[in-house]
Image (cartoon, rainbow, N blue to C red; front, side):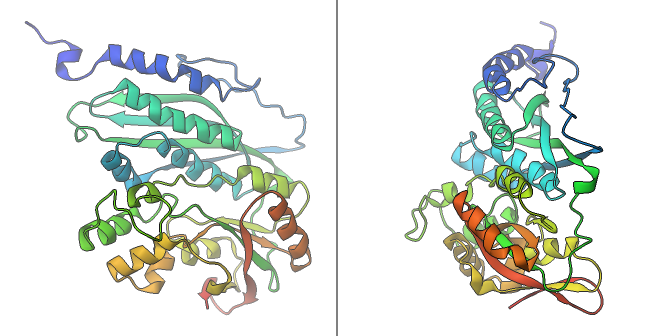
Length: 344
């Protein structure tokens, strides 16, 4: 018998089955701007530009990283897609952009239609939370390239903002305040260190029940990245936010200074919020230095807003009304030399 594509390791029929299984979830993200269905060579999106004077497109791309290892170990795949969407839409949100649409890329060694459907269900859920249409994607079956049962995810988002409303941080000045929006745990950063501390060094089981955690260890680590789009876009309708920093890889130490003009630094009061218990567990398990924790993890703060001090009370009240967990975590000060961050 001669070879065919299926015998070589690529099952086209499984791919077609996966498309059928994901169709309903993908279409649930569509609004009137989407002009194509599944199966086209490109996704067509016709944005309503009537509310913009000088529209600018803003794009961002990311993956999920080694958090995927947890999904493989626990065989839980229905939330990891939320992480994928969140990492990109939160990035473009930092410049004041409202997400329009999202595209994903899923690669695996052997396509499993039901697992693919679970992954895409999470991507669709993330898109709906962000108000973005899932207008396209790619599923690649790459025999022999990935370990059995494993896959990789990547994606990108495109958003829109009026040119005079782009948030750059250039107007931040000494005396401005920093509000922190709480995270849902680790989000999607620092998992290489977290796994090394918890599983390699401390020897925890992935399903260990630990007293101070609401879920078993693996499920706690798999909490999806919080999507801040609705909260921040609602604030932007009422207030002028001077700067927004998405706290991802590099933690507070690396990310908040990225939006500060030269000659300024942020002073953060670490006692102004309580990081989730998972961070203390990781630190103790790995005997990790405090500075390394703040450089690697978000430590309970997923996004920072730099605001005028006169808006503090109103913004915090508005966040409370929206059910957002937020607190005043620091202030902007004059600082010689490069922009920096000081945690006290």
